[in-house]
Image (cartoon, rainbow, N blue to C red; front, side):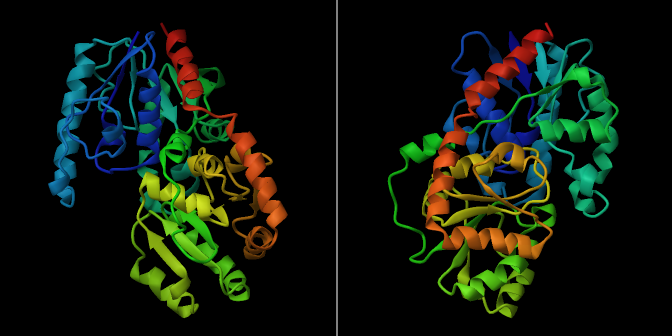
Length: 369
């Protein structure tokens, strides 16, 4: 069996949860003899692809700061993927995001679509930047897809809530993480700060709810004057964020760190806790990263996060400042609770693996032959 993956999630951004999902899937497949795959990609600066030879693409790091460079790369990648689709030398097509460029040319070849979340449907009016306009595109793809993979039971229920689709067409395949490999390979490093800190990971805007987190955490920071916050990834602080930190007299206790796997391992390992205040996640890979790093986890009680975290986390209402502050203060002050969360996180991690995700995805492909 041969599967064709296209370029979409690997064009433009060097990192991202969607490209990470497909990279991990292909890396697991590369260890097997019962499946072949091709990644149709000509130009990419995706950092995950540096870790394994999964495609013969060209990098363009010197031009990555140019907006038009990504547009040109996207057009050329799409033309290349379209050629591969038209050639038809595959058994299953698995596009890596929501673009319908291939629909007129795929003929009767089966294709599988992964549905990650309904964030743009839930919050599209509130945050138009999320891509409210792609609803019709998603609907068209979902109608034509032979099978739709959802990455959590929560994402399945949201799919059924927002789109007309037959439930029998949906398969839930939970994600895994290879972050434990990075943990094992990373030599112990000193803490990035000489004081206790909470860790926030990833983008901070819109439904990620960093502004709500910062508002709720201020009383805790003022009570615990040695406590700091590290924000890993998501881009440097904006002028507006810096103004908020200054206004709260906390600017010297909020730190930004760029995102690298090795650096992230160290930040998780030394954090008092990882806090995830998001309003909506299709799965929540950072939860597994924290578990892999023996880091206590404090989570929003929304979307898929309770499904992933189960009893290995403390939960809060992300729209209730008092609820969030109380949950965070518990891990700041209770050493026994933190030890219990570390133990439960290690146990919870055993339920997830990339190879298990790949096996279940292969079974989806096989069901369509």
